[in-house]
Image (cartoon, rainbow, N blue to C red):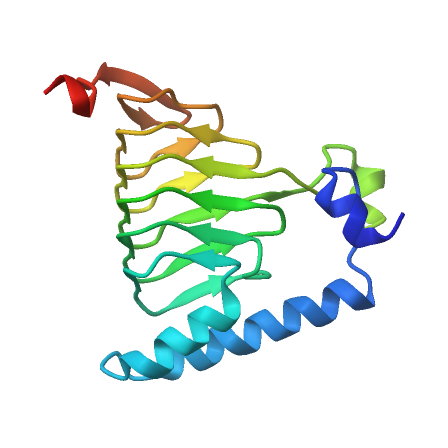
Length: 188
């Protein structure tokens, strides 16, 4: 099994030449994107088209933004990312429609073992993150590996999401916890 196959299976892996090359390619595209003027929409869209695995027609990603691989990130329609966000998309990072992300948020599919000996061997793991439709992330939110966030959810500013968040919820804190239920969109 290759290191990339181990990564995709959620097993411990280490970054080899193949993965190092893919990381470097994505970082170059991010650097190019971040250096492109905001009003040069055609160039910015072409870069994101080359970087992202899948995207809807209507999306806007502000600079500065960073992806590890890019191709592991899928975004739906009406996707908006404000400034200074990080997407460690070592594994799948999937966003539904109508997702809004405030500045300085981070989505981290990558993680490192608790065992120091394994960390010394430069082993890491990656677990997917899935986000439903109609989700709003306040400023500075961090989402950790393996989390699923339902639809019609608000994650309060500064929250650290370490566990799944059900649909129709407001979650805040470190670790984030549900503090309020929101009526389902079709109930209103």
